[in-house]
Every structure is written in C-alpha cells, then in structure tokens.
Length: 193
Image (cartoon, rainbow, N blue to C red; front, side):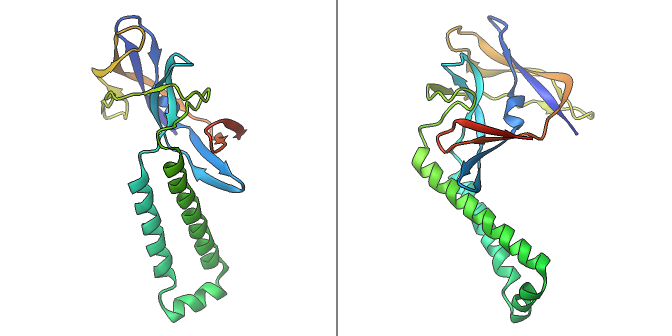
C-alpha cells in the first residue's frame, strides 16, 4: 500500500524535507521486550535538518492503552466458564499472553517517559541539540487520497530565517517493512527486515 506525501520547503533557501520519515516502525529494545518508540518532527542542530526525534508527550495516552488492555484481559476471564476455556483453548491462552506482553511493553514505555522526558534524541544521529517543530503541516486530502494545496507552517528555518511551507505532492511512496531498533538512550542499534 502506498502513502501520500507532503513536502516542507523553506521559502527563503528552498531547502526541503518530508515528514514521511516519521512513518517508519521504530522500537526500543529493552532486553527481549520491544517498547514502542513514538517520534515527531524536530530540528536537529547536529544534522542541520528536520529529523524524526523521540516523542515523550504521550503518557496519558499510554496509560489509557494499558487500562483498555487490562479491561480486555479482565473480560476474557471474568467468569468460571471463560477461565476454564482459557485452560483448554491454546488460541485463547495465546491471546492472553500477547495482551500481557503488550501491557508489559507499555508499562516500560511509561517508565521511559518518566526517565527521559526532556532528554529527547534525534533518531538519525542521536544528538540532544534539538528544537521542536511547532508548526502545522496538515493539509487536506483529495478523492485520490493525495495531499493537496499548500500553507505556511509557522515554523522558521533555524539559521536561515525562512518559513517552511507545506505543499501536497502527487508522489506516493511504498515503505519497506523494516523495523528500526534503538537502545533506551535513543541510539540506533539494529535494522530488521
């Protein structure tokens, strides 16, 4: 399946980047546990570019996910018949085990948010010298599911002073199914295809 594309272009120097780089699957590896890694767009001083950077502003959402999974687990075993079925049906047991692993992974994410919030890293070079992208690059989609139009984002290009303009593109991309694995400090350690 292809995904639509937006260009972010500086109106002064014509430098251009894409938020498409946020659409990669990324995880932290904590021993054998894959912990979800969420990213957002930011300006990396080291790369001198818009890059995906760690995003630790989702503690409330993460807790809601944990609560929802715990409620689902409870509903799978809230009667004697359901508990009996869990012991007899391997598929049901596998579902419970998978949900328990999801909870463990999300709990580790909450701990990571508490430990690292304010110490986000560039997911390309690992630098901590970042500036949050506080602009708005949302555009309308047409009936072909492509972004259309353009608008100023409100984000000024550091070192240049121009403003990034979001512009829709007719180009669509097919992304690879690579999982990018990071250590708990935000450094890339492996790529799994």
